[in-house]
Length: 470
Ligand code: UD1
Ligand code: CA
Image 1: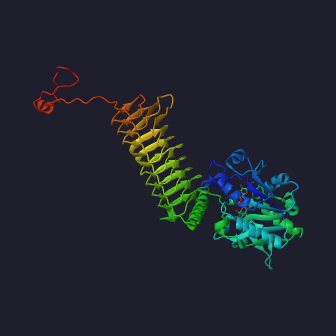
Image 2: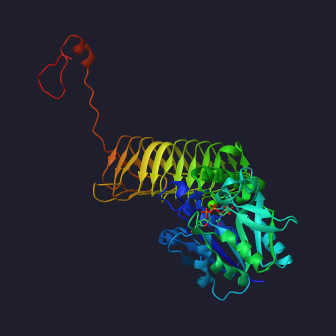
Image 3: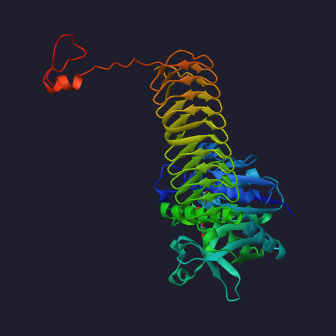
């Protein structure tokens, strides 16, 4: 049978105390609404409709879900009203409609599938998934009759003292036959809250003798609703643990599973070792048998196999080749490519720089807008002067070049293949292949200078003929 989905995302989310729409709050690198949509997509529904409110533009641009349809709920007048707003977009679809909250990011596709099977097995018009909550006060209570059938869902603010005792609660996940879904048009305004409650569809269906059940197959871990930042933090922690556990299963070693943060869209090869306090963000891909030492953050980057990323390193939008080594304390800024077996050492910053195989920049350098060949040695303290105050320029260093320590390469400039640059040079002109370039002031030795100073006759080397007491 066919399935369609409605995801509710038009609430005001006041309890978040935030400028960001609630469903766009981030959990392990993606908005929580995206998380819900990712789960729902796995069921291959025929149609997915997201109901959004005033933030619809922002939501559309933040969500990556091709084919998803949007419905506007002009004013947040409750979950029942939200579903009503989705009906024109659901249109003539004929089958079961799943309704989910956009603030339930931990929901798993398997659970939704199981729920849908029960709904169909029992031939229900309406099914609700429920779970037992430790503290049920944030949820609608499932009120059952003497024979155990569902009678109603009662929100906390409307519950009497006996109903408040009930710990079986509404997850916000419903399966509704298309004809029963039309009942949202019949829901009455809840005067206490000034909203149309979707939960009232249960009594509406029962009044019409439509077969309705609540299935207590959920867990609080999976169906916790995120209404506050405290709940957001808890949901993010659950998701974080799930992701680390799934990579562990795929053969990644974590020294401290409790302090590693991996985004949804990142991936890690087997036998890679991850030390504590590592953040692997965005669409980062790490190859097999690599090592990531403590306090490293890697964003949207590709790391090869058997690479080593040493302590306290930040890598953004870049590529690191197989068996390369980066860090400790390195900053690899966007657009950089580090070749195979290359070495980037401590306090080295790269920006939009390409570095060939076996090239080394081991200490204290800034290499920006540089194209560096293979087998190059960049001495300690080397700087590419890529910015003239108005524009950026490129430094080209060909294969097998040796750049002496503390050199500045004033771009645009080219250092030819196999050439040497003497330490402390300021290179402003191209260096031909195979040459030695030295660009620094010649050294001057002033003989006897120390002895003369101790007699009070220090010669000021800048002012001719005048002695100076220190
Ligand atoms: C809702 C349910 C409650 C259930 C809980 C599960 C109702 C009345 N209550 O409560 O029984 O236990 O979810 O998490 O349905 N939304 C709209 N438009 C609106 C209002 C809300 O689209 O006008 C969206 C929100 O963006 C959110 C979802 O609907 O994603 C649920 O709304 P929320 O206000 O969080 O409902 P709860 O109080 O959590
Ligand atoms: Ca909620």
